[in-house]
Image (cartoon, rainbow, N blue to C red; front, top):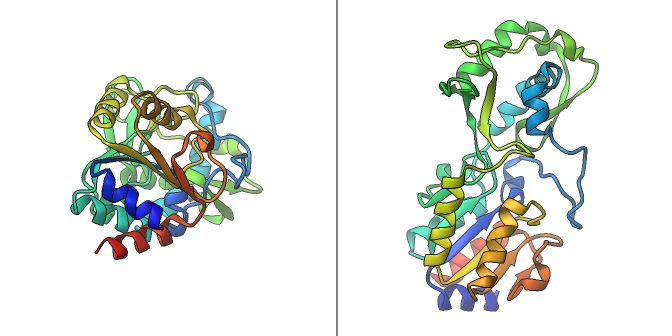
Length: 270
């Protein structure tokens, strides 16, 4: 903790990158174990979702049960501590790989949702958008039999369902053009919009140092910011339970619960 306090005191403008470990205390499962390995099967790929009706049927059936867990989740100690650090001027930019919107709910304002948000739906053809709440109601009306299923929550608004005939699931189409609907999140295999990445890199250039919170950095879209920070000669610290892809590049690391560490940091900085 002394090292982290000195780090935050010495580097006044932090670029913070957060991952799934920041939201697990809010009841949202993460993807990887302490060694950075998948806990379960890899999520749906973008190209598979776009090309296959069967993949979309499976995705939306599972998402029907996974979404309420995201919608009802509340910010935890890590989110609140990061919002407090921003309010005190320690965080210049927060880039999150999470899609749950919990940083904003906790009060953070300098946030880039690198991988998008689950609370909105877009048409891949006409780009019309609507709220997830509206889409959820339509999905339920088209598939009343889903109510009888039993599901187990999985990461990013997914769920595991047993005994459901996915071929019978009716997937809503865009009300404007009949196109394919997709949550406004970046799927695996899909590129993050260039403008979003460019803006995040600009904020990194303006910062003094980087702090990774609750991320294994196994996905390159997050790890590339560590690589850029290293090329710019900026120190990188991490708070994460388990191995990260950047362990050999870190100035220091706290292998601990990020909520507990960040709360203690805020208290001691006071």
